Length: 475
Image (tube, rainbow, N blue to C red; front, top):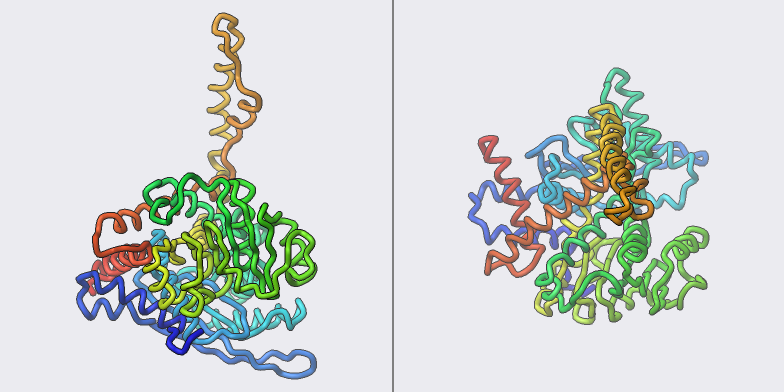
């Protein structure tokens, strides 16, 4: 990065300011929406390997215009207060854009999880959770964490268990965190949710030929060349669904130790399996290895998906990025300086506050499931199947009439009779959410001459909703 490169937090503030300048908010209210409400910093000790080790953790609350507040907890060696507060503010606007009834929050623990054994991580996670729970920074009605970089189902299950141990009479204890495994109060489809949301976001974008044309593209997703940076949970699922369901060619995958390329399209499942066993893409036989991974961001493609960390597209490389369409599967992968360069080049960017909102959307569904204490689909699935069976039986009777001369298609009965279970309902709700959020951004993008990009449109929609919520409370 160059000396003039804004930090992640500065980038978020610059993007907020660009949108706020186009609004007529009272100055005091604009400041209230901008600032982070509070940040709790904790330093706690855990006895490991014969000594006490001290860890530093954070939990930031950006906005309580709605409660509980929502946001993931990440485990990374470079976690810091500025990053956590920037991520918390993004969560506020993300939740507002997809109309999830939460304020924004975020947490982090300064730790490299790869340096610790499984039982050691459990000890650390339990103690971190204890420190947050006793200050109501994990609570079903006040602050509901979820997984983020470096955390997953296991950590969420541990945190939920720790909360239940400390709140033995709370009937809604399982709703204190989301992203839990299904057998511990989680929901089907949560692990894939953010990647699936990226797929749905692209599908919705490609439903509008005029929007696709703004990126210098045409047609559908079928055959589009895609570069994915980061094959973690989000990047893997986005790449898998786009390649197996939409016909995209994943021509490049960038990982921490280099990149893998195949112009005919990589088999994402095989590449992910190789990474799981070898820790990177070096030596993978399923494509050509390139040592300078980040240089691959500058290769020719139709769609670029940065799905790992913030700031990978910056003022140092933005001018050389050739992708006409970038979808931000990670938080803040394009800095404010790079965003300016790319917009002037005509690159269309589908912003992070929309593109990776699939995770918080399905987390919302999980939270509702935990509060209602019933699995989605349990009440209506068989009734739905019975109603469909009436129609199928009548169609089968009519198909036996030789004078009509028609018959049911193969597998029609099996497909039509199947009622929607939890996974189908979750995917349906996520698809509907991503469609609605894109349409709200798109309306602003196309109706205002002073809005030339989707990011500004997204911030305008989000800020106006947060402002309305505060104003309804009398602020």
